[in-house]
Length: 617
Image 1 (spheres, rainbow, N blue to C red):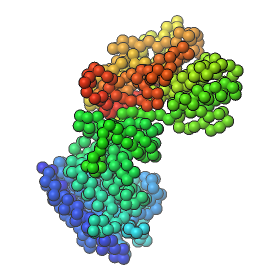
Image 2: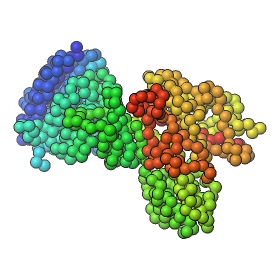
Image 3: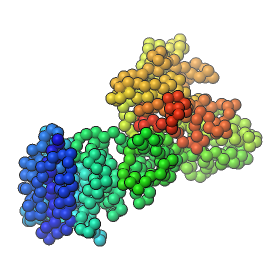
Image 4: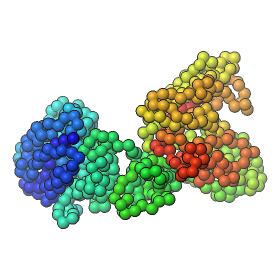
């Protein structure tokens, strides 16, 4: 059985700067730990005057230091924090943080510096223990590297400066990478608060953390705990944001991994919310997330509002119960939405008016005149109109031939073309906001002796024809560097605005293994038939692999080359299984292995991409 060596430090009785809830915090935390039957506990407590700097140091070195492999060392500190401006290059906030012990306010007594605290914790972790620091004090987000009362005191003039040689880091090289897990009450520049909660004075953070532990149970992951705690504290204070450093996919008080996602669904005062937003690459409403722990039944939510760091969502096809509002669910993006393409119209006024009407009826497009600001959210496309014709450009930076525009039907074809190019760009730019699987796959393009292969300075793979104008021949590999089999599809996106999955149309690649395009046969790279093989001629391909934990529908990723005679996908109900609203959904195809049951999502997924230029030297 795992032993948790716990040091609970709570200080209210500060000379000249008293608090009222810190001792309550650590008493409640100790009581919670004693109720956990799945671990043995060895507890030491330091309250008020007992919590001197020397006693806290000794408690960490002699008590927490007894932990070893298979054990957990837990420091829970509730009290004052402080900070001092510094020019140390590793302090991104411009301030150094410290914990204020009971005697730190006495003349001549220092606080516990952040790097000293971090070094003590990491020293314990280096001997094999799982080390956790819970800090409920101001500026605690950096402590290891009004109405309500705040847990901060001003910097004291006798405390040694960060610039003092050796005062904190033994030579000024900065802190080493963190080995412990930090649960902090607030960001480094913020203050932590306490107030009356449930009949007694408590720290917002400690109260929320213990409440979340009671809801989620002893098997809770750090990431889920933080999501629930952050929401509880946010309801009490808009200026206090709890932080988690490390361990998102680990269970609380252990180093056991928890399968899941960096994105979590929780219920907030504003409704259901996923912690994925514009900062993560989420671009438009209509995107969907699927719950990873659906228990066999697929449950999803759809985005109704994209915020900077989160998205408000609505459940689809299921009705959350009261118990769900106290839970945290791991989710993965299962459909991505894109804002309308930003179409700039310029040229002949009569032709522009016809195209404006056609574009207004296309949900994936929005327009702006050439002399106005182009909408910034969507991909940029340009229409240059002349008397009776229009030319579309954008996407792969290869202009298309001009199209006749003498009637509304002709203008509709221009809108079809713009929609086709927008969809092509969505495929080319498709990236999962969750980078986990994307970081575990890669594509290689290797020469076979026919033609040459080189890498340009901008990362493009350049494949050249031979001197006698034979097209280059290469081997294309999909490398799975993960520890599990992955379902892979290799798309070839061409500058003819096509997307094909014929090179590798869907199969598993084993852990640590390589899947080869065309079942290990060479891939010939050549110019399109309409382009003459003359010196300086070239074409581009974007090779994109989409990987997932299970099979998924490849139809939304197939796109025929644009031609003016082709039927519009948007006017035939969404060809190849794609939606006219621009949402790409990774759902299993009908029939096959999933016949007779609900559609299954792909689980977690990712992408990798290389750009290939085929040229005639």
